Image (cartoon, rainbow, N blue to C red; front, side, top):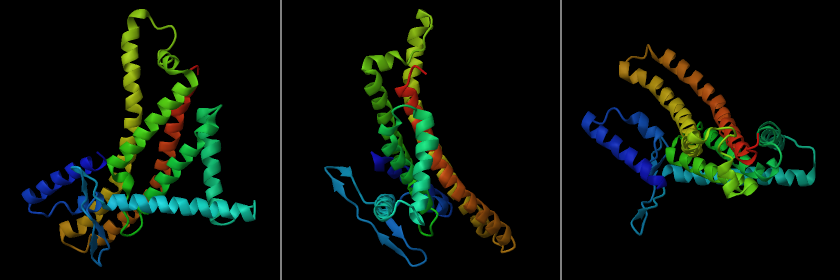
Length: 281
């Protein structure tokens, strides 16, 4: 299912390429997932197509970058853990990791979840650093932003949905959790409508998480490529200084957006967890 969405999008773009002469999809080629690892201008490495029991589990560019992000996270936390064994005073990279961890704990988890936030802190830290590393890796030359893949952000949203509902049910019980969705003092004739609205709200929250992260990370890359593309569309070098200057500005803005989106996704997830766990508030 993770690959089917990307495959269908790519098939649509391939059809558009054929119909338009193949000159209008170079931007999406750099944004979407693919079956080759680009090392422009040095060429590319084809990635294997794998099918298991009729299910496409091919290794794509975004899958490779998922593995790279996972390895980087393991290395980063291993370095930080080893540094604390030598000294409790952080230095350099360990200091950066401590600042981020304390930020997630004191400014996101504790205020939004409240009592019992410690149980959800490991998950929130994992989500925050995963999105942060993924966003920054996409800004590296020949890198790829896996959070611009709707399948990746949808998977993150599904996991968040499970954690939110699981946290609420563990704290209030299954029946008590669903009963707590309806605010007190609601007239009896409104109860069926309110229950349906609240159930739909359970699904719209993770949907908003997925779309917000996907749209913001995709939009920035498309704008940068579009600005650079003006040079070739207008077929003049006179526009190059303006295009490059604006593209550089958007690129610097993307660095800020990469951090903000990691914060927003983690903060909203923690907020939804707090709403599910402490329904009395």
